Image 1 (cartoon, rainbow, N blue to C red):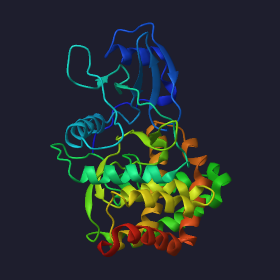
Image 2: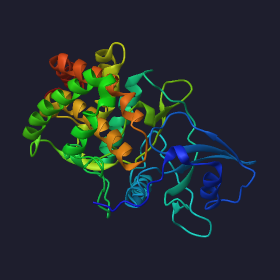
Image 3: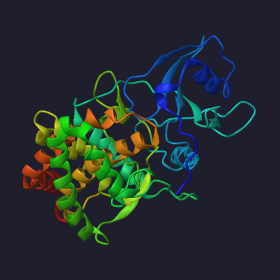
Image 4: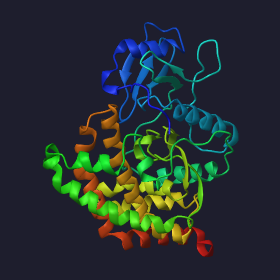
Length: 352
């Protein structure tokens, strides 16, 4: 495990620190800074210069520089090795007078600047095109060769999701009296978590593993204004060597909280099946792995609170939503598997 330096807290960043980060990459003291839409972990701002607009990111990850280094190395590898992708990936600028694409600022965090990828957040509009892009990326990542080892643990090592979370810390935090206002969703999540992890243990050694993006949901994708194609895939910060099917589980997990989630999932898998790979055993594991992603988020946000990287509200405001997702998945387990198997069989035939 990495040692923790003083955490860089997103809510405490001021414009001076943002401009300090920007100055590592360009001389643009008059550039206008404005927040981007979305993002729960890092501080991300548009940088409007006289000639061009860029994106500035200050990482808020507990100063884990190895995660930043890996993300940048992976994107460099994808740019050189996966040249047939139909969407763009972030392209980072080098520091002034150097080749490295990230730089430390005075609070210990890392900063980077990249070109803007045109597009808008798709949310639930046209999941099929997102699935198509996810299938492309999954197939490309399978072939990527990396010298560095991914610092992000696989999802099945659930208690490694954050340096400050463990079973004792989870129990202590969730049993505090101030958590009573979300007692029902906490109880729902805790009970379902234990049941899910018992099944997850049985999948170890049975599911294919490869490099995955690890956070490939609809808020980390951009689509063209016409909503007919994906223009970019963002935020490879949590890339990991993991079960291949976890990529699809992460993609589908957000749809569980939407209206008509099964139809959204079917649409996504219809696109995914054009380029992505999936076995029947992987499909049958998906309900548990969708919930595994949800539980990982729960532990991650509690860990960030304990580390001082965010407030506990990052968890409490999502607790009911997470519980609702888990309940829906468990109530529709067979329907999810049947829908995915049907779509994959249509595209893959006897290969599925």
